Length: 173
Image 1 (cartoon, rainbow, N blue to C red):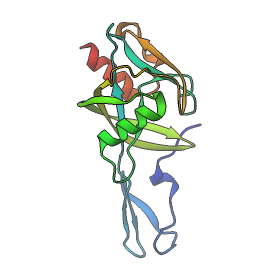
Image 2 (tube, one colour; image 1 turned 90 degrees about the vertical axis):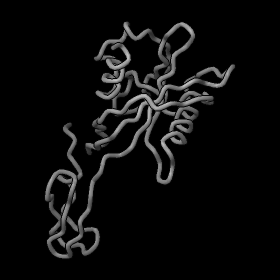
Image 3 (cartoon, one colour; image 1 turned 180 degrees about the vertical axis):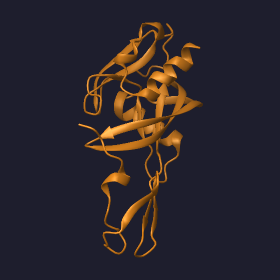
Image 4 (tube, rainbow, N blue to C red; image 1 turned 45 degrees about the horizontal axis):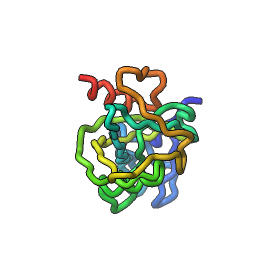
């Protein structure tokens, strides 16, 4: 099933209820009745790049769609009024049980996240992370399995999202 952009789905204005809500350009819906301008911006998401002492990368097998069964980095969406670092610490704890001692921004890549028939655009922020000493990862919320892999063993088809493929390429450079 192809996912639709929010601009392709919403046609009724949420303010006045008229069937006059239409895209003006990608990411902008405008109501011709009440002049509401509604911006559909990229959602912020975070991901942790964690290496063990053997130089292997921590990856999760996704338990749910989208990309069920594929490999992903620990992370997720940033909640309202949450910093990227707070979201990263929360998501890593929820998915792996790890407490992070250190986080440092690495890079960012745009991404598409198709969920229940809607295509969301995201800006994925990647951070290098160091877990607290003695902290051991385990499968938790939305995680089927936790694995450590060397970068040079990863195939693009195994990876859940284009942004994850791009950060692997970035790390290999």
